[in-house]
Image 1 (cartoon, one colour):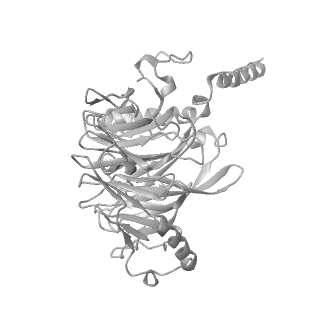
Image 2: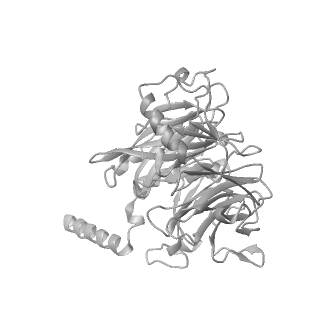
Image 3: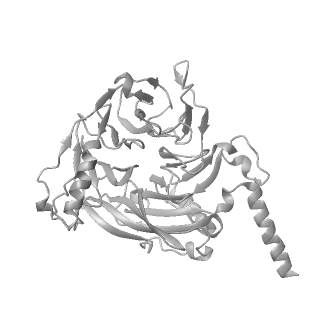
Length: 449
């Protein structure tokens, strides 16, 4: 992490550039840090904005319970917000665009939240325990998170890990399958197919403000569909293949990337022993081209692998290496709207946006600093002043991102949630942008004349 002085000057410079670089930005101060931020369903659209659910958590010091938070977020549509307004915010204040809708008292701190793509009202959470919790956030009662409050009852508990499973958590895009990794070096797979139907049935009966006492005294639990062995250390992240519920990948503290195929058994289909020189923290599988997989590591880099040629002489041979962070990479995610674009966030407080198409290409619009820029890096979000622990592209709202930092190391606690969209002049086709700017030029010279 940079020293405090250079971090503050970087932040000050970033804040002065908001009107130029962003179409919209909301800054929301969190009393307690959230280690995850995920988009839920879009609720409604109006002329100038739309409303959408956002899933967060509160990681507390024990004076009040840990919670899973369901918020309603208002997202201003492109080219609506005034440039001068979006940069006028107080870092210590809550945003008027983010409102808490429901609180679930979570059994233990929430380390990770993942939503089920086919039904994003169903979410899974990881805490410091061997189980995975499944929640139907719409039917769960809204709770007052007061000291001593009993935890909310999960709709389902997934068992199968032998030791704590704290971070690695994935939901399948094609089937209601859940994947998890833990300190036991295992990758565990569940199907929650039968329980999804039961949940929606129970939900329609309990919608009239059900009280905790009326709910089942013990949450139902299910065992695994498969347990996969192949890692030599803690599994840090897992991801399904976007086109198959039977194929998935995992990364861990053993520096390896493993591809699995449940149809072929419980041992690795392919193992990349040395995918990086450090621990691997995150992985994402491209939804646009299933041959491409991204990994992020404690060695500060992101590697892009082609699964047709993963290894060379027993060592991982990525097709690209991306070097633009000064600290461990914590999160990588492909952009849902453009196949060559992905984001990465790290402990250096930066969220970088990369474009494969820009690797090795010099653009006519590149300025004098272009040669100092890492290949492929085309946007740097420097709005956080501490480690960016999670971010999520919005599938319903192109180029809109939510990101969250854990500010305990810098501003004395809490966290910062930001929802933002870069200005479209940065990602639209160059010829389109040049034509638009030419029209403005003609208009401005006409006004001056």
